[in-house]
Length: 350
Image 1: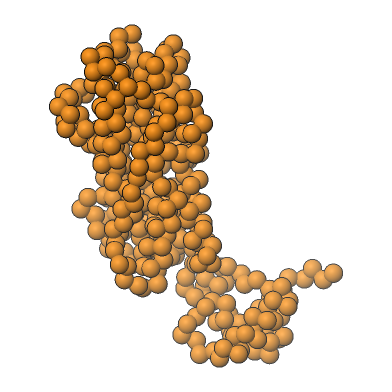
Image 2: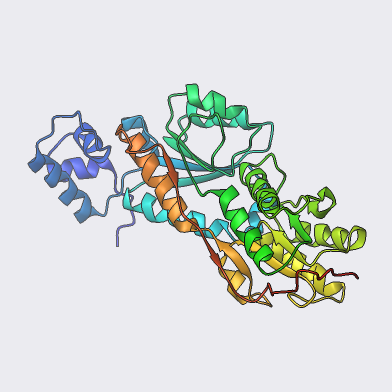
């Protein structure tokens, strides 16, 4: 069996065309005036020889990388423990493969956004990018508005003109806390999913505050803690809450990843959910239905968010005008076993 690598020269020789014609065919150059029958002849020759165009050469010929980037504003330590992320990547890959593109995944540290965005766009490593979990303090977003590279945010930043796909984090968080209030809870703590510099964290915290205000419940800042995306931070913040202010009957945890740690801290304190403390999460990651107890949580349609973000980016890459540059995906509260009804006069003291 001949293991010699097949080249574009071999394809050109078999098809009876020039190497430049082969290059134009596989670069999908719409400007080249190559007859359909010639394109067909080249593709048949390539299939017969088992030829696959080199990605680097193809990009050089077309001045396109045929790659889009998923840029995450978190370090690999958090990314590795994020149970929400695989759904996002899976949704993106479904569309990317349909479009015969590649997906580059990269991350950027806070404070390094401008340099990273400029490097990716100017070096032509990617043709467009999707930014996951954008931050309010990301000065690089302003720079992206001026660059000639299509970009979609997976999350909304006020006063930023870049197109985005998101859920209504504020209203969804209010829905979760409203449910706890309907169950009779008045002392309700909150553990955010991340620092409030992240758009989703700030918006979910505002939803918590909205629900308390609407129910005429006084806001107690001592009941609010900031987590850091993962279960370990949820454990630390819940342990701190129980030690410093152990007078609450319920907690809204703005991430199921974080909620896993919060549940462990409650159990380690000799308490149980929902008998001692009711808990409502956010995201409805696949594992939420298998926690003990099964987690009541806000369902965030991660795959749909990813797919809509990718569809929007594809429209921009093709020079099309989207019907809308802002897309909001509905959420719903999934009621399981982690929250229970209590008397309105109930106050838990540990």
